[in-house]
Length: 77
Image 1 (cartoon, rainbow, N blue to C red):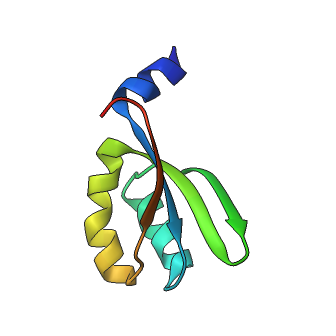
Image 2 (cartoon, rainbow, N blue to C red; image 1 turned 90 degrees about the vertical axis):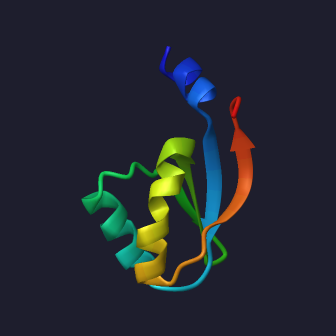
């Protein structure tokens, strides 16, 4: 049932290349923004996030000077 609800809500797979990535993850955790499937490949960090949480990233991104790029979208919206 959880996978179905994730499909209805929509998820986004993002990648982060430069900046203060460790601070980015710490601020996301402190603001209760859930990042899932975190992995690294050739210095690029990939993670999945719900679409509703993606819009909450803006203040965190400004503080860390990190630019998340959308790699893939999943779900309806």
